[in-house]
Structure formats: structure tokens, C-alpha cells
Image (cartoon, each protein chain N blue to C red):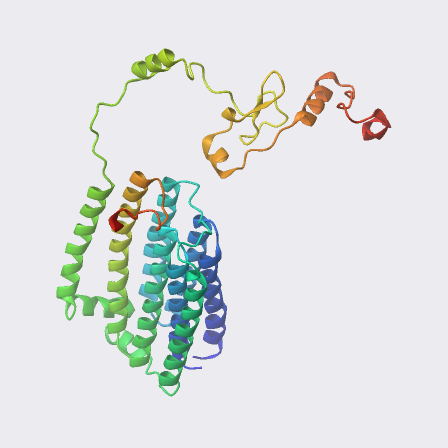
Length: 270
Length: 99
């Protein structure tokens, strides 16, 4: 390793470790996925620094491009409430795991460093030049020495694709209800005959997280889309917002809500 | 600094991935930690290929990537199926096999 590669190693290695730590400590699974993407991009840079440009590109395309996006896609399917619970099923398991992993890491790092500190590196320049480049060298190995493993890979990929289709497929046992039947069922039960109220109607904001206000001024959470409600992101509304609505429509300062005198209303001076 | 620093980094990343598998309860996050461990092994393979001066280590890393991609597809399909029946992605929920 020479001057510039040392810099690359420290920058990308540090970022990769930060991404790995972020994977462990993020509460939300989506954040974990993004931290892993950071780690994988940095590992790709380290592959390229290790004279493996082909693997670096495959790492970016396959891991950050396909695998992590598949993870994110499944997270969207699985839903927004996929954050971890902090309840420990086994008492003390978390601390025991951290202590054991710390010891394991010390053993592994010290063993590796002990065994390799004297190791001299041959370097890949000669091996890469033998076939005219890194990609050509890997291709020659894949189609000569590792041909059997390469052929087995195709069987593996087909099995994986079939397995994913079989596992993720859901057989439809009943005919899907038509729009007319759904409407008739709604009318028969009397629930939800009219459309749900839009968010933000009669309220201060036009955003989806703002519940609509009923004519008596109370907010209705029916108007907030369910994912927003499930995350607990619905904006709290109270009657103090109503005074500002009156304010906007009348053009004149509204009477302050009951419980506050006109004297401590800051708008009274203006 | 010799290229063995890469192997030390791979050991650290592998350890962090194993912490993730042990500590987290969300099946998808555990799965991502397994991916992290596979990536750490890949980094070690690439570093060893460079130290030994032949490309076999890179070919092995390539095969690890292929196997990891296939594994991710099947594993995520299993997680989606479990979520569909149990409405949860937590690994503590599917305990029906206990009884």
C-alpha cells in the first residue's frame, strides 16, 4: 500500500465501519438499509483499490443496485411499522451478545494481525497482465478451472427464481369482488357509504398529515391516510387553530380563545 | 501498511455483522447483517487474492456474490410470506413450531 491507497483505505474503511454501526443502531429498518448501502459502496471502492475493478463494479450493480433496492422494496411491502421492539425476549441477551461479539472481534482481529503482519504481498499486476486485464483474467478462470461451479450457478439462479415465485405467490381462492358488489356491501352495512374526508379540509394546513376538522371543530383522524396515522405522524389539532382560521377569513383579528384575555394577546397591539 | 489491513477491516465488519444478527429482532435487519458478513468475507477474499498474486480469490468472491443474490431473493420471499400470515417481521413472532 502506498501513499494514496492508504488515504483511500482510511476514508472508505472508516465510512464502511460507520455504515455497519449505523445498521446495528438504527431503530427503523429503512435507515438500516441505507446505512448498508453506504457500506457496500465503500467496499466497492476498496475492491477497486485492491486491483479488482470487475468485482467493484459488480458490487455496485448487484449489491447496491439490486440487492439493497430489493430490501427497500420489501420494506415498503412489509409496512411502516417495521421498527424494532426494544423488549428483550431473553433477559440480558443483548448485553451478552455485545460482550461476546466484542471478544470474538478482538480474537479475530488479533489473530489475523498476528498471522499476517509479516506477510508480503505479491500484488495482482502480473496476474492481471497475463490475460490482458482483470476482466479477461477472471473470465479465463471462470470458463476453465471453475467451469463446473459456473454451470452449477445457473441451476442455483433458476432454483432461486422459481423459489421466490412459489413462495411469494398467493393463490386466489375466491373471485375478486367487483366494484358493484363492494358498493352494495357498503350500502347494506351503512359504513363508509360516502368517501372519506380529505385531509386538511377546513383545517389550517393543506398537508396530508393534517386531520380535517368536523363542523364542531374537532379533528377527525379518518381523513389522515393510514400509513401516516400508523407512523403516529398525524399533526395534532386543537381549537387554537380555529381562531387563526377565523382570523384569515374575516381579515380582522379574531377574538382570542376563551381563557385568555385580550391584554395578553400579542395581536392586540398591532 | 501491508494489504493485511484489509483483512483486519474485513474482520471488524464481520464482527459488526454478527452483532447485528444477535442483537436485532427484525428479520429484514438480521438479513442485512448477514449480507454485511458476506461482504466482509468478500473483502478478505479480494485482499488474499492480491497478497497471493492470483485471481482465484476474486473468482471465489464473485461466486459468493451470486450465491448471496440468490439467497436474498429466496429469503425475502420467505419474509414476505411470514409477514402475510403473521402480520409481523419480528423473529420472535413465528413461534408456532415450539408447540
